[in-house]
Image 1 (cartoon, rainbow, N blue to C red):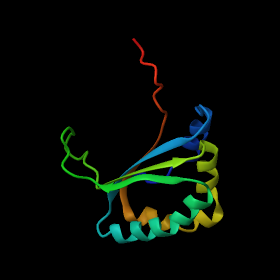
Image 2: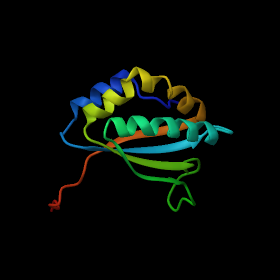
Image 3: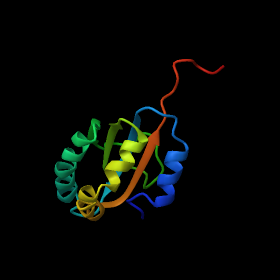
Image 4: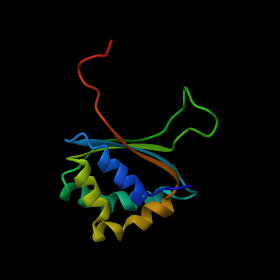
Length: 125
């Protein structure tokens, strides 16, 4: 299973950029004994988040899924706001950041990393 974005995914992310901040949804399924590695990755990644002006909005463990197919439960959820999609791409391609991504890769069995777009305050009829 993929745990890191591809170059094609980055191209599409930027092509769909509506401008402004982006909130990234992270759904995480840990490999056996992967939590310790992920916590070390998180500790080291926090400096990069600060450097690039990103903010963790929420981090927590998954609990009982109320609506999910078998195998769709996640071990953890992380929601991070970045100043822009371009800033996110600059951070994850930073060579210093790349040096710690092995910790994330070894920690995860599966992941979803998805950009979100805010709903407008106007409701469509």
